[in-house]
Image 1 (cartoon, each protein chain N blue to C red):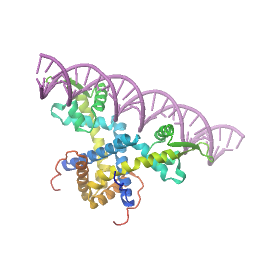
Image 2: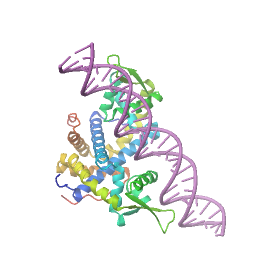
Image 3: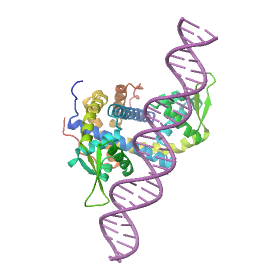
Image 4: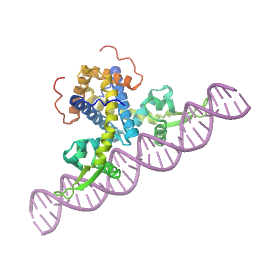
Length: 160
Length: 160
DNA sequence: CGTGCGTGATTGAGAGTTCAACAAGTACAC
DNA sequence: GTGTACTTGTTGAACTCTCAATCACGCACG
């Protein structure tokens, strides 16, 4: 067990600013979605992932793995989304253990209704307050963090 | 209601990288604390705030306001922390409605035990994977976001 | 005074997440 | 084939957070 490398005053200030910003952002987005679309943020993400999949269908595992979600959490969430009529479960014919989650038309409609408000919020709270340089820097920083966490990353966007 | 300004492919890629990074980080920190110190991240933050206050004591409201927490959440959390013996409630003599939360010696000890692991994690997952320039950029970006959210910000650190 | 209104804090119910345990199915060696 | 180990997905209990309701108190105004 080696000596702890504490944060300098500078580092600590940056760390706290970062956490405040992130907290504030996620809180803002979560509230906006809950208020305007009556869905928690994680459910929105599930609907987005399904809407982009072929046939709007994904295996439960893939859906869980795509976002950093646990199988258990996803199972509970999909149960809820099923009650809402936004998602439907379907058995996998080739692997009898497996289940598919399928986005229903109602689910797609709910997502389409929720998206504009959410995107507007993201634009206002994030992109509009940063300069183009800062936006590019944020992309690089995020990818570096993801690499540090072992998350696979896509190559950065082509030059602006 | 004006037209929605959607995100470009570039912006969306940055947005998703950012959310993945943030999610991964907070998840990592939360798990590390839960595993090694048996406390949720928000409770850790409460202990930190108390440990820095004069007499390790704060009004419930101040404690809630300091972090973006609701009174209700804080009340529940302090009840838990009280059961653990880490915090103690104390009546306010000048305002009989008020309560103080006081960090106990056990609480301070628990915090002291948890801090090294947490700081090490923050250093490894965040500061070690970024260049000094990126760290400074992250500070500026975070402050810009906070301003956009209406959160008061401290002036940035003196030049490195 | 005392009535009314705003504030500080708590409570309980409902919703989401986590964790461990479990059932069911598949893969693979022997 | 059969047994063992791993994977997929679900479940229930415990825990945290949110929201609305509530209680107790302070403060100002008639």
